[in-house]
View 1 (tube, rainbow, N blue to C red):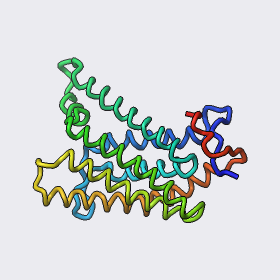
View 2: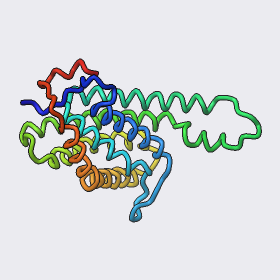
View 3: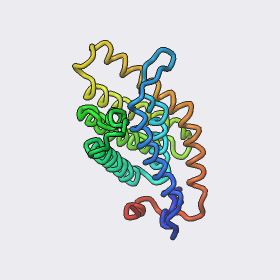
View 4: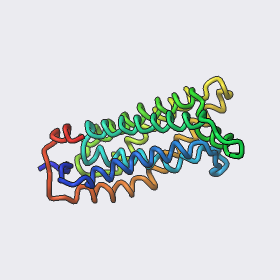
Length: 227
């Protein structure tokens, strides 16, 4: 019997909707937090480093419960949501504003993303998330239903490599010394993987258990028309 949950519950508020919404929300939060830099144990990192690994975690849950094909559609949905965020907030930057409003420069600083950084973010997201999801399903062929932590951590180790490499290489190559660039890549990669392992994986266990707690199941592959 398959462990995949039937999303067609007759209610617009089902478990798949909840997990997908959580995924999109975490992605948007990560992009909004990315403009602030923070320090952890002497490392300078974007504030999004505490939220983005959780986005990977919810992607793991989607793949674990509903499969790679369904998770891939949600990943592209997240890309579209992120694209709309960038487009509409940048439209807001160039809209006329009253003379008494003092927040224009602050708004512009947050939302008027440099095109190169935006491209880097999109590339890192797509390649990182798709690889993360595919890797989890591939590892599951060897582990079966057991050892979820191996799948969540292992897939993140692989996916975060591409995400971090694409983002920093496209976004910062040539603008900072190569030694600094390598340090940024390594420190952020290790920090994100650690967040996924220590914080994301326990949450993944809880969400997967909750999502699979359902008497209604459907054979693999029959979910492709549900979204």
